[in-house]
Image (cartoon, rainbow over all chains, first blue to last red; front, side, top):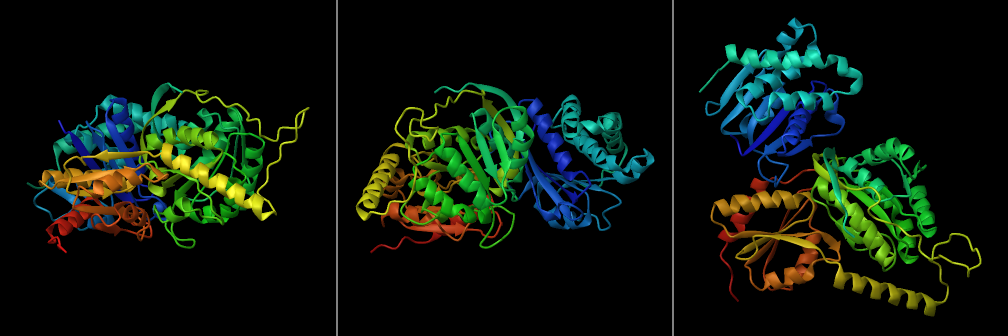
Length: 187
Length: 360
């Protein structure tokens, strides 16, 4: 359905931003697609802003670094300010409700607000908010199949945390449900 | 040698390089950690004890390179890796290794400089890698990967070339290539056989003594060695040039870029072609030997070269030498860990082709 999707995922270090991108990249590999995952790395990783560019494509990827994105998944205010203008016209922006005080203003893109942290807290595990975001994203943009995502999750989550696979899976599903009900903001 | 490919994996460039080295029959790795290449040492530390070879974290880069010198002299397939400031520390040893004509693999995952600089990607070490780096007239064979797959493949190529010419080979990568993940397919382990060479210091055992040194006090002897080295570098220049071209056949403006920026330029060529601009790309794969001939040939046909680098303009000098005044050579770079975007390259292309060409 999409030939190439260039995705920016950005937030604070520790929110699972890099893992979300990795999961998408692994899922793409499992479906024999082309993919690249480019992190912003360095001392900013813990506590500061972290982001990664993940590209999934049907054809060989030229540049793994791009400045215009088809999709943006944004988990904090500084990242929204940095990347809102970098979403392509008619692109998609997903943002986490409670961490963003000043919502996006663009009217030429699709904007989705997801209360991922609130929902994660309700589910009793605040670390899974990133999976709720990812679930919501995949409901709107089914770039990869759910079974590939679950296989990827198993790969990205360290083995010592594998007892948390079911709760992560529930979080993905919860994200998919959330976006169906609600939050379709503009255009 | 046909190397069979096995399973597809998703890996960071640094990890892919380390895995490739083990599969290429690495006997020993000596190194000292530095961002953004520490995954190489970490990967070896985890894997080598379970598989084969020696991995040692030395007390410094100076120690590492001299351990490489010793192991290479003993005929081992050996390597080290570092990033810019660490590579600077190794230059004396590299000069000795080149003078003693020992094969080894050096990996520089370049970060922004000068000085301690930044941990973000850069190509500021092009001069250091291709023009000697250390003292004296010597050359490294320098390969510049632009994908995670090439971070793997060039390990095999570098060992082959190093051993063929008894010369140190370098993989000149950058922080972004080291840290990014892409698909990679590995050759089978053991697909690059290694025979301990007869010049190696393996113990006398009834033969004449093998002697490896870079010290020759008689000027006649030292000049003879220099002439021999220069002849070898000439042979390498005649036989081992590698490059890739994209859309150069009808191009009016040709981009020249190596490593990751070549991928960015590939996208810029796509964007330019969409706008009807006849743009093309030459990607030097070997930085020494430099692909002079293709650039010289193109310079007689095209209107402009545009060189894109993550530095203040280093390879551009080699492009100018190859173009030899046949066409203008333009340059655009970013420094200090900043990365140029495909749109920036496109903007530069548009700026250049809109300028009227001055006739003499």
